Length: 132
Image (cartoon, rainbow, N blue to C red; front, side, top):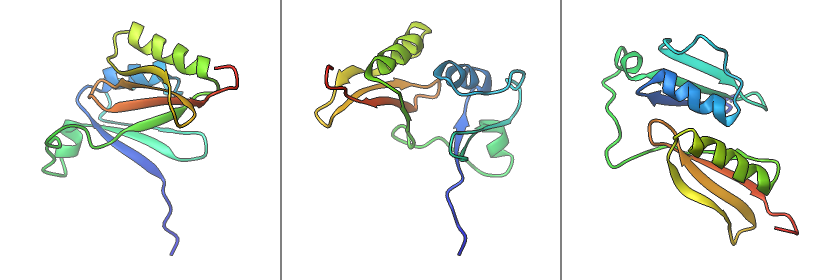
């Protein structure tokens, strides 16, 4: 069998807001896609992240939002603990909601979480340095 993981798909309420968030996070997403119903970008390592609007998903499925909250979270590795703080600050200063402020986690990482426009948690983390 040649099945391999290839992509993460997310249903979004507002494509423009979603793309703005993930661009600010650092993903290389082409401009001019804000009104598209489906957008995808290849990530380092060859996997993809894909976003579909509610209307597109409902065109082939009876999709409804998950009851009780989010069903997916994404985690982004930062190069240093300082980068965790910097990315967190950039996103929250732009108006995105904090879920967990940066802290030094007992498991050895600098860790924070910001919510994307649809309320999905986006974790930011880096290994703690000796001086952190």
